[in-house]
Length: 247
Image (cartoon, rainbow, N blue to C red; front, side, top):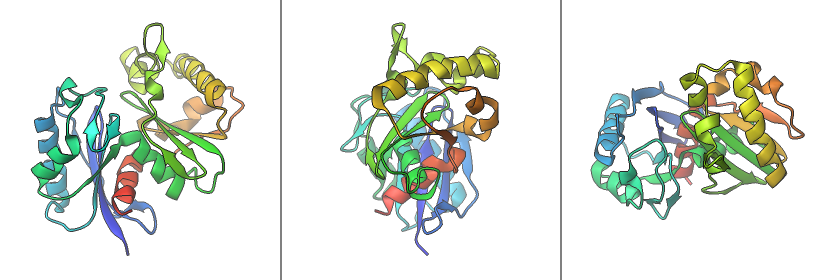
């Protein structure tokens, strides 16, 4: 049985697990710690060490994938959403490899979630363009065309009244402003209608923490594109990172 380790670093939590790649599901418990306040590279690395130690896999020779909330090109983080600005232009992959003493595969977190859903979840065998969005601290996105990933799309940073639309539309905005499901869904409607107009996707898949409650908001959206919850919910990033590490 092929196995790999996935770590999913988010603005709120850092999660990890061992993944059964033949089934595309967690084989271990999902370990979670809070993302350190400020989310500097050193503190995030220490938190990753903590979750790997809790899983007892830090010295494992299983492939290890790490997903991160930033544009990732050639191992370098080119943006910083909901983490320290120290990550901008930072050699993140080398930093984690040096800190963990081993090879890793380092990817954008929403891209990892998209890979999980296209290989093992809601977007499997869907032809054309699937757009996965993760609704959490911010909004991540992954474009998958006939199963192939187009990396580093950043739909959460579409402009809305001079700011990134995720500030107004992410799940964190609903919590921060104590919005009802109806009021929050009205904001999602603006976001998804705009994305639908720009890209004419064949399917939307919704991941992130709020995907545990699809019945509370998906029926309120009026779109021409089918929109469904991610099958792996908040574990998609772990599963996708592990899957990419094994490629």
